[in-house]
Image 1: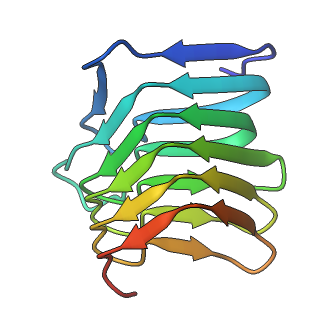
Image 2 (image 1 turned 90 degrees about the horizontal axis):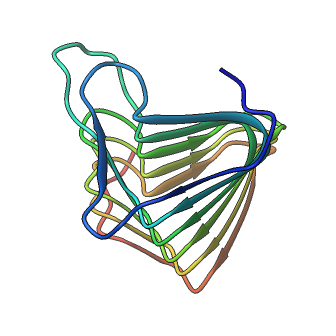
Length: 145
């Protein structure tokens, strides 16, 4: 369901969002501002071959602060479409089965103190027309595509 207003998801220490089927653990499709703070978002391997995501931003403006994203079966974080933007501050995208962060054509990502590591494929992929700005980030120990 689409959210037409601003919403915040704030995790207490130790809070984990996990999902075990072929759908993303967390999908944002909103026309309001979405704030994620202090969350550990994990996508576990399912029995199927369908790639799955920890976070998928399909529409809206999302700010994630002090969050961790991991996908054992697909890309960690995906930002799609021209109507999608993501701001990451003090976050980790790690231990993924594929790419850590994927920025599609027209999507926008801004990151400060982002750590992208130990993803099986590339740490970050930006498609032509995607917009990525990194400041004080660490991208290390990722595979190759």
